[in-house]
Amino acid sequence: MNIPLVDLTAQYHTLKPELDEAIQRVLTSGRFILGPEVEALEREAAAYCGTSSAVGVASGTDALELALRACGIGPGDEVVTTAFSFFATVEAIIAAGASPVFVDIEPLTYTLDPAQVEAKLSPRTKAILPVHLYGHPCDMGAIMRLAQAHHLSVIEDCAQAIGAQYQGRRVGSFGTAGCFSFYPTKNLGAYGDGGMVMTNDARLAEQIRTLRAHGSNARRYHHDRLGTNSRLDELQAAILRVKLRSLDHWNAARRRHALCYAQTLRRYGLDGKVRPPHEQPGCMAVYHLYTVRVKQRDRVQQVLEAQGIESQAAYPSTLPAQPALKPLLAAPVAVPQAEAAARDVLSLPMYPELTAELIDRVVAQLARALAS
Ligand SMILES: *Cc1c(COP(=O)(O)O)cnc(C)c1O
Image (cartoon, rainbow, N blue to C red; front, side):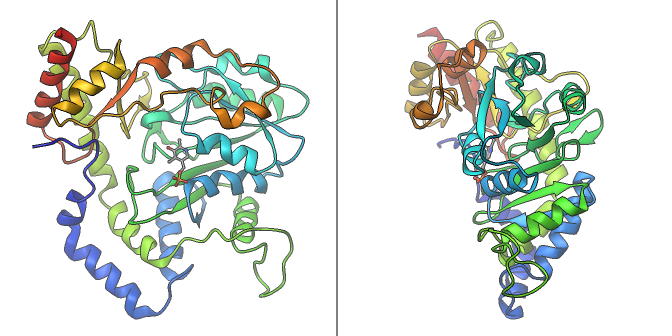
């Protein structure tokens, strides 16, 4: 039996009666875009993350772009961000019209290193965009201190980290805005695309409501500014409301599996060869991905694949090394920690329904790959 990186069918089977009821409710209601389900999800998700407002949008990428635009960030502005993330992080900055400025990562958590931010600030810097990568919270204390000292907005990319906590508070509630993705494989996944912006700034929330609906808000066919079409639909919202009730339970299962992986790696004597993820004190990670460091990553991945075990190099390249960015960057960017991570990282199967037995099979094959 193969072991997938994520299993998206298991949750449907567990929640089938409630999910089917939610879908039927929307189909019979005749409301499909931005209706009562979206409004209810916005209230429930804001309460979950500990913010006063939430705005549903079409994707995590749009959540980032619209949050930046609502903060007044655009052409001529610089946004300081991590060199190691999914490409959407930097795409959103460029789509908003601003320029990304890359900072290297902390090697233990793979998140933006706050100690290297100050050297990258310029009079054009308007925001810091940290990414809670793999579900591990960034050092939000240090980032918020920097932002306050330099009057910068903070846009948190929480696409991989819904429910993660930094010093007892959920990510997405620290910065000016927190941006979430409901892409099916994320910790809270829809059955299609979806995203959300959380904020404690009611005016910012109103701006995003306007931007997501063609720059029009209270008055129909009256457009205050140029926006876009980035709405969340009622089906996805109804599905997400059901799933949100299980999120803490699923994240707790991911944390148990992370512990089990670490114990199993030790049991197989692999702790010297395979570096498991590290959790910083004061942080509660939600393991969107379970990412280890291993030499000869590509060869190891091939051995696992031959044994029916899916794994993923997330990410095999730093952001500044992506071909699409070449024409936009004035000079090559030196980010040695991100480059080392891009060479060695390997994400192993991780989803709430994983079992100790499956973890044992993954690690046994990892041991075989490293012995050969
Ligand atoms: C998934 C992801 C996004 C984009 O979310 P979409 O909903 O797919 O647009 C942005 N940033 C990170 C770090 C992600 O993992």
